Image 1 (tube, helix red, strand yellow):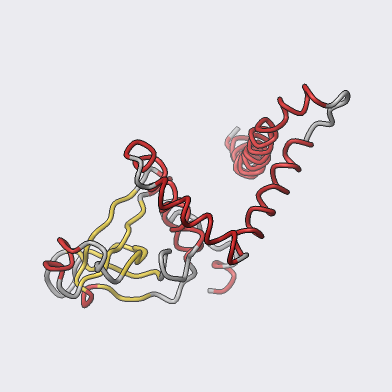
Image 2 (cartoon, one colour):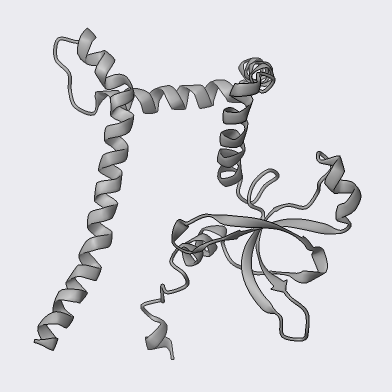
Length: 203
């Protein structure tokens, strides 16, 4: 019975990530497809499932190409500046824009810049947490710039994607890690329970 239970759990552990990945991709495609799909069904005599998804992807690519054009990019920046001046729209648009920039510009200005270990507490052996440096300057926030000293903003992700929090840490209390940001996020989300399958073989 124990052997059967062990075999079942091994199968379940293998099956669930695959099934959930397929389901999330399917649900994502269905949601994107619905953006234009409902309108296309009213216009086209025959609607092919997935057509709304393909057109949405093409439109996003065209938007990206336009933004790389100096003229179109300048027009969009002016439009964005006007949007961020409208109180209600600013409260929604600005955080969403900053969140997208955070992950799309990983390794560059305005994005997640590097993985670090943060010393929390005093003493020779302080508690350490892994974090992601999000900014090293507070010039755009004068109230913080005047009192921050030599500090950096470090985002500490919580396990299982439940959120996180940001600390303004003195620079001398962080230690850079030679680790890709994607690897750090993966370890944080799984609570560091993910192990390398080849780890046991290397020892």
